[in-house]
Image (tube, rainbow, N blue to C red; front, side, top):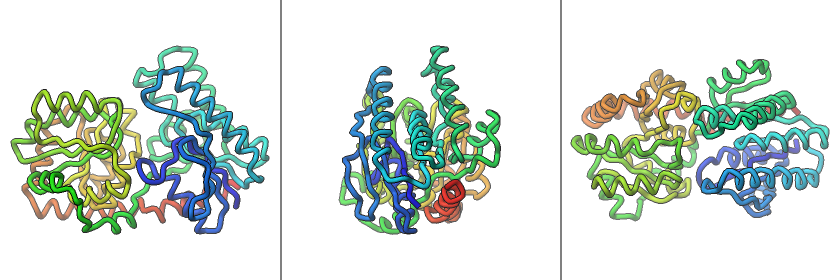
Length: 388
């Protein structure tokens, strides 16, 4: 099977590595894979996957118009490069942005093959709910585009059950939508186990505190300022926070930490996936935060599955399907955004109750098996084969 895999923000070593894992597994199964992306140079990976880049520059610091230009550049260049590929059996486009769906539809028509659309975040619902997109004409245009892409997709993959329910409410047939959550990279977790950090300062911080980690983007929706809001009370119980990453909110967070002299928050720059997994083996809890907006509860953030792969109990400052999964497996818990006291009390309980903490670690690993790369890939491959 020949697959054209479109992912504008394709990554191999850090962040969202889902496309890397799925393309690697496709090659292992003997399939021919070409990835169209904007973030890498044109080359062939060692495993035989062809990477074709449009060299599209993109940054969260771009203005609205600059982002529109970047999206348009990726669409046009991807169609051009996609047409140069030999006839595929199936085209897969993974959002965001929503505009990657345009590439999938156009190439599927010109190449006369089915198109599968993977929805990582439900757009335009999220930016509309957050007030990022307010102009009525643009809202209407994006909703039309969304319906057009869904209509022409042979199948749609979503990353959580609430995302599927969102699509069903938009009259998308249930048989056309499959839930495949993100991936717990258990193999990488095993490789990074018991490896030294080679960073005495970080090692001292981890050994002298009960550490809650949050690796990943520090953007608006991530709400990482939440850690500064609970840091003083957490310090009274020997609880500290390790934040790893970059983003638009990082500078303000660092200023707050300095102004309030919060010595129990340590911030590191972005690390590779391997380095993050190595560090996670030395922390106590994994955390996910978002701003107070229920539509964000539907997310399928990579770090949630990274924690499970390591075997870390997980705390959330929101609820939804991840809270329910953690509760069912007794592997962590979600709290409503305003319930900071409840979250601190829960962390304190895990810190002081060794038996409970160890049981939750074991349960987290069991839950991670459900989302292993191998098990999720089998569902992914089935969708592609049935669609092609």
